[in-house]
Amino acid sequence: MEALLYVAIAAGALGLGLAFGVRIARRRAAPVPVRPEPVPGPPMADLLQRVFQSTDEGLVVLNRSGEVVLHNPRAADLGVVTAGRADARAAAACQQVLETGMPVAVDLSPLDRRGRQPAAVLAHVRPLGNGFSMVEAADTSDACGWRPPGGTSSRT
Image (cartoon, rainbow, N blue to C red; front, side, top):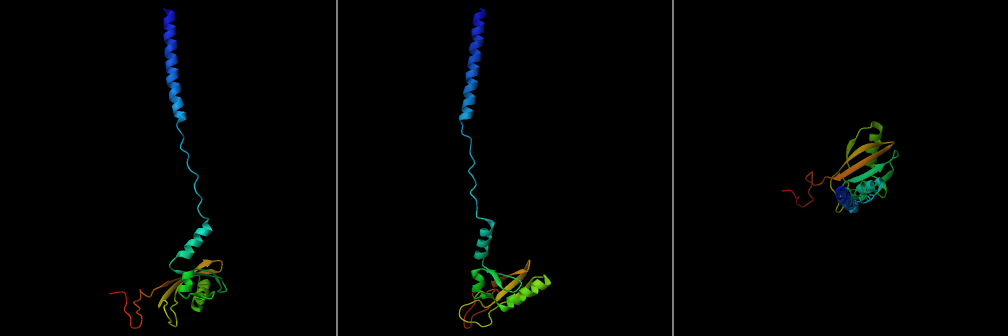
């Protein structure tokens, strides 16, 4: 009788061991989710360059001597930069900003209207520090209600 009891205990322990072992094996067999490596984005300088080039405003950075350090295509479209040189009014405003440290607004509307170009350009000039300033110009022709000679405004 004692032998039968020992065999039953051994069989029960064997059954529990097998059940426990199978359960552990299933847990280990399940794949551990692997996080994909993050795809590195562009360097910060490239990202800033993309923003600078794609904005709708004309952006120009000038140094202390009034030379254009950086500008986007829209600045040339608005006439703020021509042939690599800043509009004289923008350069003068940059000098004022560097002297006072205070932002200023300046009218950079074309002095002579030829062809198809913005009629009204308003710029804000801000100091950037270390002798640099930035001109941010926008075409405000629609905002001021300008109408071409003999034409009609898009506003009703």
